[in-house]
Length: 356
Ligand code: NAI
Ligand code: MG
Image 1 (cartoon, rainbow, N blue to C red):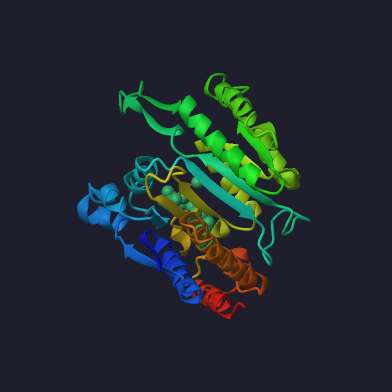
Image 2: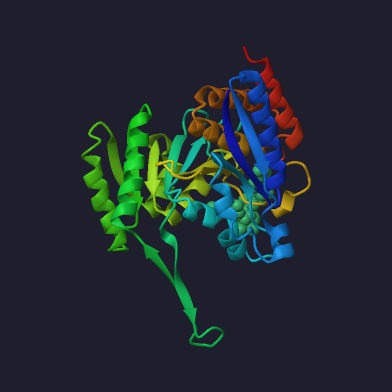
């Protein structure tokens, strides 16, 4: 029996609601498949832990996580704790400590879900956004001086390294090569930002030589938002910096119907450390505890996790079940349905059980 050790970190807001649904679907897959087992350990880290201990996770938190094959993460963020504390206290130390430099965000319009774009349906929008996840605008370099005084300054320094840009570019070209259309769009802002962004463009051109069968083009990030809305069929694989891809992938999620269906994988492609799988959305204070959080993003990221663990058949089965349930109209209110999180999770488990 193939066994994988999974660290579940549900954390805050709707995180525990969607992670519970995700674990339920994973159990249904284990039973259905019979060939693998997930050994899940759940950690109580997050804002409650912070209120009790003054830290989002124990000091040796990442050390504890090293023993796992993958991390299944909910969301962080609480109304009474500053967002930079929750983010830098838990999610970013894991991404950065484990050098999960490739953040992979697939977007598709699932059957039964309506895009806010007129005349755009399933098949018209099928993208994967690759986000540089270790440096760039979120490198954490900067500072504040003269705090509280009129002459106060704050700096936020973007760091682009040749190693960092080359490795994400290789990852993106390889991913584009593995997809049917072999199409990559490289996003920058190299007209206004003359140093790091120009280096990004130069490295893209260098790496492209190793992938002659991939067709690639360049976009400035502002124009990219227009292309995503006006001409979604022209895009396939997209690579962008930490900040740019953060923003573009929220737009992508919205164009695919809801943030509640958008998944993300924080990957260490060299597999030195566990990779982390999570829905893109945050802790959604406005719907926490109502039982209506959309679990689809979490199912989808669970499928990414299975894929990464080397269980592609189970991953594909999970996605077929999700698509069937969406097509049947069993959906939460954010995508126009009336179902609860539990209804959707039960329906997905049933679809997993019933599939031939
Ligand atoms: P958010 O993603 O939590 O919510 C934005 C909107 O989308 C809300 O109206 C929410 O109800 C809706 N939404 C999100 N996920 C949904 C789901 N699964 N089903 C149905 N509706 C859903 O973003 P917001 O409001 O900007 O941030 C709330 C908190 O979450 C903040 O503390 C923020 O820092 C944190 N956050 C954490 C992230 C993470 O852990 N990776 C990512 C984004 C935000
Ligand atoms: Mg974001």
